Amino acid sequence: MKNTNDGFVGESTRSVHGGEERNKFAQSLINPIAQTATFTFNNLDEFEAFKSGEKNLYEYGRYGNPTQRVAECKIASLENAEEALLFSSGMSAITSVLYAMLRSGQHLIIMEDCYRMTAKFCRSLAKFGIETTLVKPGDMGALAEAVRPETRLIFTESPTNPHLHVLDLEKLVDFAKERRLKVLIDSTLATPINQRPLDFGVDLVIHSATKYMGGHNDLMAGVVCGKGALIDAIREYQRITGSVADPNTSYLLIRGLKTLALRVARQNDTAMQIAQFLEEHPTVTKVYYPGLESHVDHKVAKAQMRGFGGLISFEIEGNLERTRDFVHRLSLPYLAPSLGGVETLVSHPATVSYYDLSPEERLSIGITDQLVRYAVGIEDAQELVDDIEQALAGV
Ligand SMILES: *Cc1c(COP(=O)(O)O)cnc(C)c1O
Image (cartoon, rainbow, N blue to C red):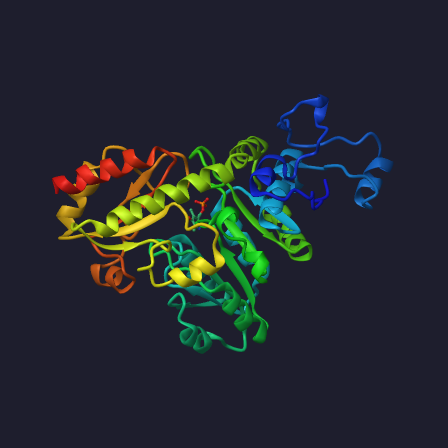
């Protein structure tokens, strides 16, 4: 199926109808799950017609599946992208894109605040002769210094995790264009509802669809969106590496995406309420939320985002013990990694995500013992606030 710009305007309309054929198999309303590993041809002439592009068919599960295709087209519609390509996880999207785009002798730049596994993978590229430089998000001076003749691309999240830095995409794209570099944005925390990086001239947008897009903490997938030619080149690579999303996962993702705009709007509102509550509370010393004027990147966020997302990080007054006590006193959120689903989740980054760093290394990237990460679900905001209030009162 070709990705047609289906002409849907609003983001909720795109969430529900984007990427779907009006007339589906057996006139079913809901897109069927094509649970098949391979596809058949009536004769070799048909195979040839398929290969020449004359006939729109599928060949083999690793090369694409109609259910996967609907999920891709829906996400392309939401991101204003020419094309989207689905993967078995966010990390498989990231690793496949970087493998496909980089070759030995080249260099890339990532941000210090980036997803742990992304940084690990980039460091591992050294064995192929590909070097990585880490710079502080938003430090344009350091970025300029990091660029070398062999630099190929800049890859960053926006917002970043856990400090929610928001990068000025226009500035970043101008900087990269002058130097003929590609810009890749991991936009997982923003979702296409809050930010569309391609509209700013970014080359590729990546999401862990495990988070907001799936939205129900019940699937793993990843996606990359961008211009057709670039995505086609990455798709060629995926045909070899095989990190495809299966039909059932694709179906769950389509189902989750239908409510994306609704869920994210709710999560934006609730997170803002909680952030404001936390900022006023004497037991909380620091709140990181781009919707607050006190956040370093608030101005940038306000200019380029339509909502500030559902993730909040904050610091509890005191020490490690008091912070652990606070986390344990929360009764509504589950203590679990991940974010973006309907259930509110809480995490203690120093214990859960950065346990393998020394305390000094953690501090150098702003992961204090007092830092708590709170990923808002879709529960009632007041109930979440009340729960946080009782936990703070208890410590
Ligand atoms: C979770 C996450 C990833 C990795 O995605 P998986 O689906 O877990 O492989 C990458 N980037 C960000 C920002 C994430 O939150």
